Image 1 (tube, one colour):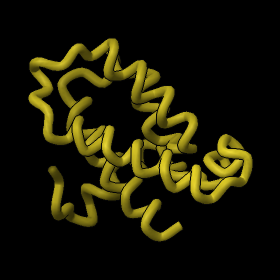
Image 2 (cartoon, rainbow, N blue to C red):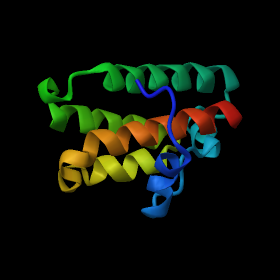
Image 3 (tube, rainbow, N blue to C red):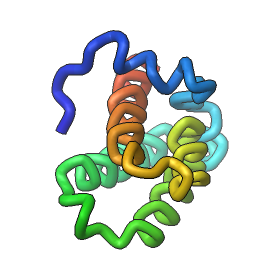
Image 4 (cartoon, rainbow, N blue to C red):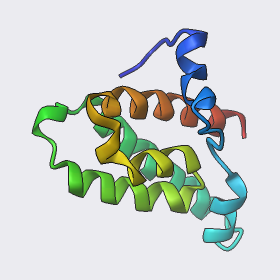
Length: 113
């Protein structure tokens, strides 16, 4: 799990044009403005990204993982993660690093939203 990231690393995805980290309005819309439900879904999503951060990526079934992550990220309003998973095959060997950076940025945005 990423515990500390340098400022330059956190800005990496933003410089790549992936700027929408977390749009709480999307989550609110998806949960019909039910704050308790939104919080529960947010915690489930955080659990999903925690699991992926701890996983051995060489043993993951990437098509399945990217498909489920993309759907969950879309419900969350995590546009940055949606963009990365939409083009996951084009990311090459940097996919894991880019997603972990996006996960860290999402966590920060969710804590401050």
